[in-house]
Image 1 (cartoon, helix red, strand yellow):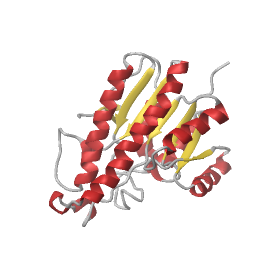
Image 2 (cartoon, one colour):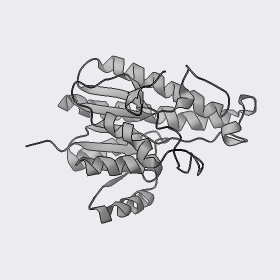
Image 3 (cartoon, helix red, strand yellow):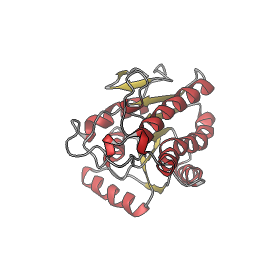
Length: 238
């Protein structure tokens, strides 16, 4: 009998995270919506029911210490396993000016809040999830990064967000190296500029397009890559 994989997606009540849950569920994965406010998660789950997709919800506030461990423990209690972790939750709060904001206007509080959500939250979730993955000798961890975090083409603007995504890429490499060449794979991906609350209405990609590479990485075969950075299912420069 084929194993039913279980996935936890953070920040999945809207945007790219919601679409990742939808696409995983269509593939037969038991995809769990992680949402800071469970009411928002339940409202999102209701939107999938007309498609015949019944997805569960757990409370998950990646910026609160202890929440990651609680969410992973709840998934284990309900389903006995966790095969896939998608670190999707993220914020872009640089200001003033959003995408045009300058390093020279950057406030310490902005950096702190950004790093708590975009970096420390994924660290806590990886720490909580990996012991379960080691038990079953299988795991897929996907970190939603950004081209804004590329060192190869680093530019100005929205500095806290850029720095947090560069750090998330480093986390990807460190986690992959420490987990070695077994069947727990850790990769980062860039969804591109996606029409979400964060990306805005002028963005060039749909949530469906933005989610595709994350879903591909979440369902990699045993001989798939680890420790990589991808866009459109192809390697992307660090």
